[in-house]
Image (cartoon, rainbow, N blue to C red; front, side, top):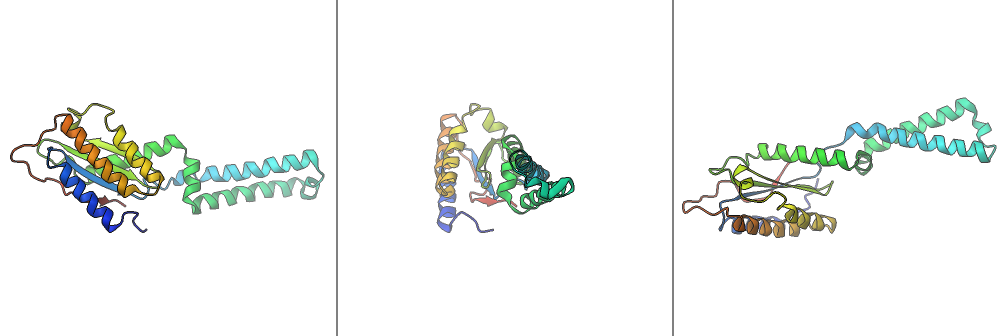
Length: 215
């Protein structure tokens, strides 16, 4: 799948991370996935929705017309089952349908789980003072997670990352995630500095600055 980040976006993101890390010991890792999950377990909900809709239509026909007599009980049952099967196929084929059927709570859980997986997978914890910070974007769900390591969490107040999240999400909605990520990284750098995550005299770049992509 084509990346939503242009070459210019990638360069600006790398530069933003590098500049943010010049004044703090924080190690910022920008990372994105197209989607955090396929939500395949909600496919049956598509079948229930289509089947239920067909049943409602048939009941309406029974109440207000004589058309339902042409179908009979067996025919009506077949229509409901066929509609249910169609709903399952539609949900299997179209990701936006699965996303709508999944619901906010399930989506939030899957994105949070995928972000934690990325934190470990990318070894964001592998810094001298445990000052790694992951900025995780799940593009299809338009969700963002910011996860700081223990050295970050000891200094940055809980809830301080919400502004960083909001910046990226607003740009996701307008189709400019690259610009949003650059602004968010700059804001992240400000938060780290004002929270006392100071740079050491012998500071080194422990984690690469470029945007990383997950599967």
